[in-house]
Image 1: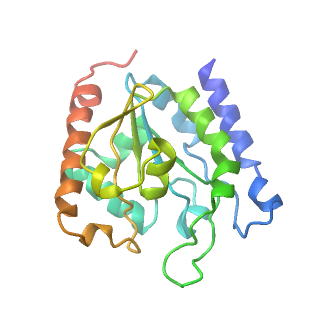
Image 2: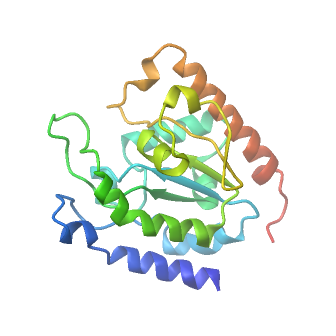
Length: 215
């Protein structure tokens, strides 16, 4: 039964120490993509969303949910502008990441350390399992690293504002909401973000808000 498999997945993820064992300077323990008590509601949705970020931040590493820090507030403000409430989205989405432990601060002192490709590879089985268990109708990769992993492409200006199809699943990329990211200030990029959020809002209205009673 999928609900039991997802509970087991969350439990096993919490015990993962692959990056610690490999010698990477990660801190804390893996951040769960969904709280155990929210799994039944998530799996009852007719249309499910897989959100994929880069890695937990310092705040997330000490908390219980992804995107609860400053970047999360920006992200959910973006979604609110598309008519999507944070609580409703969290109950309809599994909020995953390319890597699952806080990678530590950047050596430059600006933002967090960018996880390496080796760390991404070590964590990849968790992401693949979540995709299989969730069977999402929409994937939202957030930031260049997640976009590259999920689509094989990485030029944000070519992708933000478009709807892609990845293995038969709709995919709407977003830029990273971190204050350390300067992408949003580039020419035309706010319009690209606005277009992406309109696509997500339209999908939400047709697949979630107007879907009636869940199966």
